[in-house]
Image (cartoon, rainbow, N blue to C red; front, side, top):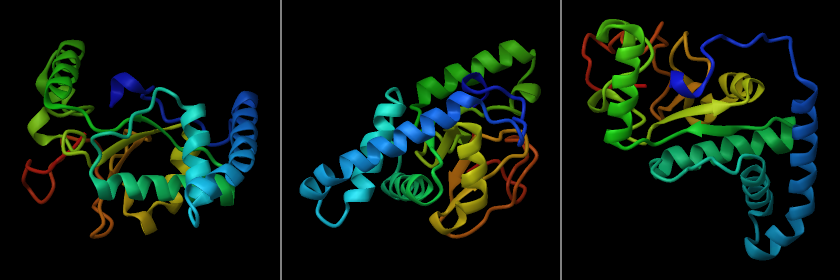
Length: 194
Protein backbone atom coordinates (compact mmCIF):
# COMPACT_ATOMS: atom_id res chain seq x y z
CA UNK A 1 0.00 0.00 0.00
CA UNK A 2 1.34 3.33 -1.04
CA UNK A 3 1.04 5.15 2.26
CA UNK A 4 3.34 2.59 3.89
CA UNK A 5 6.10 2.53 1.28
CA UNK A 6 7.87 4.85 -1.09
CA UNK A 7 6.35 4.54 -4.54
CA UNK A 8 9.69 4.74 -6.25
CA UNK A 9 11.13 1.40 -7.27
CA UNK A 10 14.39 1.14 -5.35
CA UNK A 11 17.60 0.92 -7.28
CA UNK A 12 18.75 -2.66 -7.63
CA UNK A 13 22.37 -1.65 -7.17
CA UNK A 14 22.22 0.38 -3.95
CA UNK A 15 22.51 -1.36 -0.62
CA UNK A 16 22.78 0.89 2.39
CA UNK A 17 25.56 0.04 4.83
CA UNK A 18 23.11 -0.23 7.72
CA UNK A 19 21.09 -2.83 5.78
CA UNK A 20 24.14 -5.10 5.63
CA UNK A 21 24.64 -4.60 9.37
CA UNK A 22 20.97 -5.42 10.08
CA UNK A 23 21.23 -8.59 7.98
CA UNK A 24 24.41 -9.70 9.76
CA UNK A 25 23.12 -8.96 13.25
CA UNK A 26 19.74 -10.60 12.61
CA UNK A 27 21.33 -13.76 11.21
CA UNK A 28 23.77 -13.91 14.14
CA UNK A 29 20.87 -13.51 16.52
CA UNK A 30 19.05 -16.40 14.81
CA UNK A 31 22.16 -18.57 15.17
CA UNK A 32 22.38 -17.73 18.88
CA UNK A 33 18.67 -18.44 19.38
CA UNK A 34 18.73 -21.77 17.51
CA UNK A 35 19.75 -23.93 20.52
CA UNK A 36 16.90 -22.51 22.60
CA UNK A 37 14.51 -22.93 19.68
CA UNK A 38 15.61 -26.58 19.37
CA UNK A 39 14.40 -27.18 22.92
CA UNK A 40 11.16 -25.24 22.47
CA UNK A 41 10.29 -26.58 19.00
CA UNK A 42 12.23 -29.79 18.28
CA UNK A 43 12.69 -30.31 14.56
CA UNK A 44 11.80 -26.69 13.77
CA UNK A 45 14.65 -24.84 15.45
CA UNK A 46 15.76 -22.90 12.38
CA UNK A 47 12.20 -21.82 11.62
CA UNK A 48 11.52 -20.74 15.20
CA UNK A 49 14.88 -19.00 15.66
CA UNK A 50 14.33 -17.13 12.39
CA UNK A 51 10.87 -15.92 13.43
CA UNK A 52 12.21 -14.78 16.82
CA UNK A 53 15.15 -12.93 15.27
CA UNK A 54 12.96 -11.24 12.67
CA UNK A 55 10.45 -10.23 15.34
CA UNK A 56 13.30 -8.46 17.11
CA UNK A 57 14.43 -6.81 13.85
CA UNK A 58 10.90 -5.78 12.83
CA UNK A 59 9.09 -5.36 16.18
CA UNK A 60 6.10 -3.49 14.74
CA UNK A 61 5.15 -6.12 12.17
CA UNK A 62 1.91 -8.01 12.68
CA UNK A 63 1.21 -11.38 11.05
CA UNK A 64 -2.21 -11.72 12.71
CA UNK A 65 -5.15 -11.89 10.33
CA UNK A 66 -3.26 -13.51 7.48
CA UNK A 67 -4.88 -16.73 6.31
CA UNK A 68 -3.11 -19.80 7.72
CA UNK A 69 -1.74 -20.62 4.25
CA UNK A 70 -0.48 -17.08 3.65
CA UNK A 71 1.22 -16.92 7.02
CA UNK A 72 2.82 -20.37 6.68
CA UNK A 73 4.07 -19.52 3.18
CA UNK A 74 5.53 -16.20 4.32
CA UNK A 75 7.21 -17.71 7.37
CA UNK A 76 8.69 -20.55 5.29
CA UNK A 77 9.96 -18.11 2.66
CA UNK A 78 11.53 -15.78 5.20
CA UNK A 79 13.17 -18.72 6.97
CA UNK A 80 14.80 -19.85 3.72
CA UNK A 81 15.75 -16.27 2.83
CA UNK A 82 17.55 -15.76 6.14
CA UNK A 83 19.30 -19.10 6.55
CA UNK A 84 20.25 -19.85 2.95
CA UNK A 85 20.70 -16.38 1.45
CA UNK A 86 21.21 -14.06 4.40
CA UNK A 87 18.26 -11.89 3.31
CA UNK A 88 15.69 -10.35 5.62
CA UNK A 89 11.96 -10.36 4.86
CA UNK A 90 9.89 -8.07 7.01
CA UNK A 91 6.19 -7.32 6.82
CA UNK A 92 5.12 -3.69 6.56
CA UNK A 93 1.43 -4.50 6.18
CA UNK A 94 -0.51 -7.73 5.90
CA UNK A 95 -4.12 -8.18 6.90
CA UNK A 96 -6.17 -5.02 7.21
CA UNK A 97 -9.71 -4.85 8.49
CA UNK A 98 -12.31 -3.31 6.20
CA UNK A 99 -12.40 -0.01 8.13
CA UNK A 100 -8.63 0.47 7.85
CA UNK A 101 -8.69 -0.34 4.13
CA UNK A 102 -11.60 2.06 3.61
CA UNK A 103 -9.67 4.83 5.38
CA UNK A 104 -6.56 4.15 3.26
CA UNK A 105 -8.66 4.21 0.10
CA UNK A 106 -10.41 7.46 1.12
CA UNK A 107 -7.06 9.10 1.91
CA UNK A 108 -5.70 8.05 -1.49
CA UNK A 109 -8.80 9.43 -3.24
CA UNK A 110 -8.28 12.72 -1.42
CA UNK A 111 -4.54 12.76 -2.19
CA UNK A 112 -4.93 11.98 -5.90
CA UNK A 113 -8.19 13.85 -6.48
CA UNK A 114 -10.17 11.00 -8.01
CA UNK A 115 -11.22 7.41 -7.45
CA UNK A 116 -9.72 6.45 -10.81
CA UNK A 117 -6.29 7.76 -9.82
CA UNK A 118 -6.53 6.33 -6.32
CA UNK A 119 -7.28 2.86 -7.67
CA UNK A 120 -3.84 2.76 -9.25
CA UNK A 121 -2.42 2.45 -5.72
CA UNK A 122 -5.14 1.05 -3.50
CA UNK A 123 -8.58 -0.51 -3.70
CA UNK A 124 -11.75 -0.30 -1.63
CA UNK A 125 -12.17 -2.97 1.07
CA UNK A 126 -14.45 -5.27 -0.94
CA UNK A 127 -11.73 -5.64 -3.60
CA UNK A 128 -8.63 -5.76 -1.42
CA UNK A 129 -6.70 -9.00 -0.87
CA UNK A 130 -5.27 -7.35 2.26
CA UNK A 131 -8.75 -7.50 3.80
CA UNK A 132 -8.94 -11.18 2.82
CA UNK A 133 -5.57 -11.84 4.56
CA UNK A 134 -3.91 -12.86 1.27
CA UNK A 135 -1.67 -9.84 0.56
CA UNK A 136 1.69 -8.85 2.01
CA UNK A 137 3.58 -5.59 1.77
CA UNK A 138 7.20 -6.56 2.43
CA UNK A 139 10.46 -4.83 3.19
CA UNK A 140 13.32 -4.08 2.77
CA UNK A 141 13.71 -3.69 -0.98
CA UNK A 142 16.43 -6.39 -1.04
CA UNK A 143 14.01 -8.79 0.65
CA UNK A 144 11.31 -7.92 -1.88
CA UNK A 145 13.73 -8.63 -4.73
CA UNK A 146 14.58 -11.98 -3.11
CA UNK A 147 10.88 -12.84 -2.74
CA UNK A 148 10.19 -11.90 -6.34
CA UNK A 149 12.90 -14.32 -7.47
CA UNK A 150 12.31 -17.17 -5.00
CA UNK A 151 8.69 -16.78 -3.85
CA UNK A 152 7.00 -19.10 -6.37
CA UNK A 153 7.58 -22.36 -4.44
CA UNK A 154 5.70 -20.72 -1.54
CA UNK A 155 2.87 -19.40 -3.71
CA UNK A 156 4.01 -15.80 -3.11
CA UNK A 157 4.08 -13.51 -6.13
CA UNK A 158 4.59 -9.83 -6.84
CA UNK A 159 1.35 -8.86 -8.55
CA UNK A 160 1.76 -5.22 -9.64
CA UNK A 161 4.46 -3.48 -11.64
CA UNK A 162 4.03 -0.22 -9.73
CA UNK A 163 4.28 -1.72 -6.21
CA UNK A 164 7.63 -3.46 -5.64
CA UNK A 165 6.58 -4.28 -2.08
CA UNK A 166 3.18 -5.92 -2.75
CA UNK A 167 2.97 -9.72 -2.90
CA UNK A 168 -0.01 -12.04 -2.82
CA UNK A 169 -0.50 -15.65 -1.85
CA UNK A 170 -1.62 -17.72 -4.85
CA UNK A 171 -1.06 -21.43 -4.09
CA UNK A 172 -2.75 -22.34 -7.37
CA UNK A 173 0.11 -20.78 -9.34
CA UNK A 174 1.48 -17.56 -10.76
CA UNK A 175 -1.22 -14.93 -11.41
CA UNK A 176 -0.98 -12.53 -14.31
CA UNK A 177 1.12 -9.56 -13.25
CA UNK A 178 -0.65 -6.26 -13.79
CA UNK A 179 0.52 -2.68 -14.15
CA UNK A 180 -1.39 -1.57 -11.04
CA UNK A 181 -4.25 -2.67 -8.74
CA UNK A 182 -7.11 -1.27 -10.82
CA UNK A 183 -6.52 -3.53 -13.79
CA UNK A 184 -9.11 -6.20 -13.12
CA UNK A 185 -8.50 -9.95 -13.36
CA UNK A 186 -10.27 -11.71 -16.21
CA UNK A 187 -12.46 -8.69 -16.87
CA UNK A 188 -13.92 -8.71 -13.36
CA UNK A 189 -13.12 -6.49 -10.40
CA UNK A 190 -13.97 -9.17 -7.81
CA UNK A 191 -10.91 -10.68 -6.18
CA UNK A 192 -8.70 -7.74 -7.14
CA UNK A 193 -6.37 -6.56 -4.66
CA UNK A 194 -4.22 -4.11 -2.90
